[in-house]
Amino acid sequence: MILIATPAPAPVAVVSGPEFLGVPLAVWAFAVSLLSFLIALSALGWQVTKHFLDGGRVKVYLNTAILYPEFMIATNHSGKHQLQNKHPAMEVTRNGKALELAQLVVENPGRTALTIYSPGLQFSGHGKKNHTVVPRMFETEGTFGADGAVTDTVVRLEPYARVTFLLDYWSSVPGLLKHAPKGYVDIRGHVSVAGRTKRPQRSSYRKRWRIRRGMYTAIEGSPDFTPLAVLWREMYLRLPKDGDDQDVHPSHKSHPTRRYAASYLLDRAMSRFEERPDRDELIEVLHELAKADGDKFPYFGLHLWEGYEALDRMEGHLTPWTEGLFTATQSKKTAPQDGSADGDEPAGEGESVAAPSEEA
Image (cartoon, rainbow, N blue to C red; front, side, top):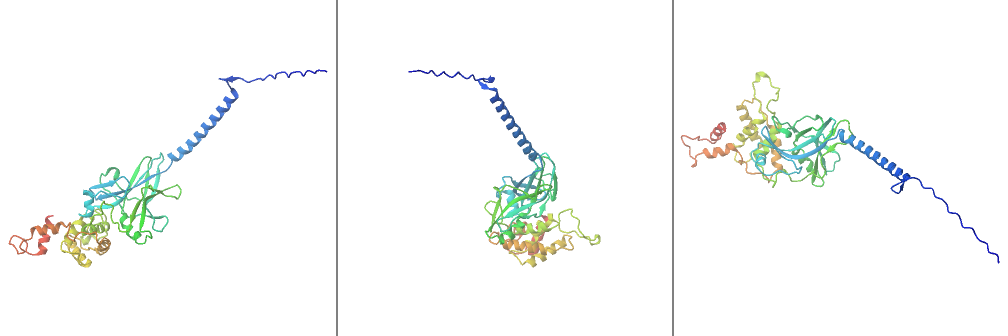
């Protein structure tokens, strides 16, 4: 038997490259390349993000507010459709000297100046899409700080600047609620930015206001309003403010009734009646008192028409007619207790009303 020996294979020599910490340099090179790519990608993303952050953009906030003209502004900065039933609210519901409004705040957090236009409110939930309204706006005079409001519909905002608008939203809500299929409307702040897309900038959807049919105020507890407060609001909105130029011939020498005189004039006229009179009767008394004050051509027909419409809408949420009337209250204090005329006191009802009014 012949034995054949198979030669054993020679070992193959493996040549390894240079290593660092036991890891080939090729692996280290790949890792460094991958890390460089990720850093470059992050830098590109940051540049794009910074471009949008520094560019023209705005933040929009919607707050409830009470404006006591030329005196103060009370604001709920939480964004909720809610106002505390405290002293400022009493000027709205009882005394007829303050307005319940919406405060629209627009801020520019970027480093580029921009122009905004058409500040207003967006309504939804009533069957119409993209329904925006620019309601009546109010301007504050004097120093109100950051809450000072303007009435311009086109405003240039510098970097890190802000602007405030006061909007009369309750003038638009009743008409929309009347035809709302779901019985409510949602309200958000709205503003357009020049040079950007047509899509407007709006306040937070989470903080939108939902106003249901039957609501008439944001004040807690929905307190009753005095007829004086309801009528004063409608008159104040439509009377010229102090300083407005009137188209009156100089020879007429007339002094048109201004906003600041609305409360005093309305108080005296309403005090002539113990209960709600006919609209024409109240208009006649208002014209009589306005002419006595120097307004030769008074006209309050539209004012009282809107005012009586508001009274009808708030039926069931009104106090007695004479509540909150200063002239009527003073007349009761000065009138003889036994109903007889006194030598030192006015004998007639009209005179007993007029005297305290002039002193007031």
